[in-house]
Image (cartoon, rainbow over all chains, first blue to last red; front, top):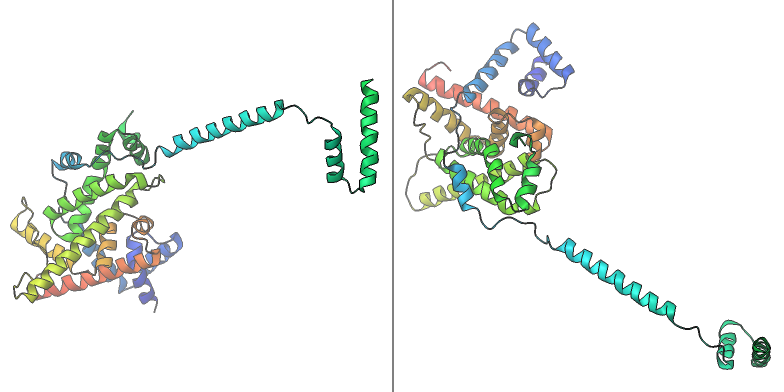
Length: 147
Length: 194
């Protein structure tokens, strides 16, 4: 039972992928088991057999062939997008600033009887008679200030 | 500045800024590994050169979409793997249709690997290993090749293939068992000690 379990771990152990504790367990088992070392040796033999293949290398002209076959220079697509965004943002800020400055320079609305009436009607819940009184009162105050 | 100290991502940024010649740095870094990987996957060193070239061209075209996360190695092997799989599929189709047309090709749909400078025994041995590798299921083969020949860790293999670590472990373990069994069978038949 233990041998079966260790056998299943041998490949990962060989690949150096077992956690330290498990690797130690495998080593301990291999030192004390009669059958498993043979299995381990076969595995080792197989891998060295596989690795005996002559390494293949790219042809000497490989790099120059690839470079010659490259298509148009690789560039980031939409590379122009950040520039466009910055320009648009700047223009927008400029236009907003301009509009704000115009509105600030605009003369305040004249205090005519009509505008006073309109403001009172709009903002306060007053009867028409009350509005009339307030309007007349405002006009009288203004005249008094001017005099 | 020493080219070796420049990261892959820095090289890519330079290429994307228009310094196309810098792409050669990536070629010199990865061509050997990529050709080696494809040769082991296909068993055909000549075709491996072509697929490797195609890999680099594809990489170049897709550089603008590469995410700079210092994982270029995984990126290039992914592309190489996909192109190799496509080639293998085409080869299988060719063999299938050749059977339909009544033309018998070799048992394995691949050209025999003939190392030019090897002694006949070495060439025969290499052919035998290549044949055994080609008989492995594709997923087992790719996992084993990345481990044995490219010496990647399971984690690196996961980045290339997208498979989980337990799956990779199982694939490699099964590939080794299968190869061991097949090579032993062959040796028994030939009565040569493995």
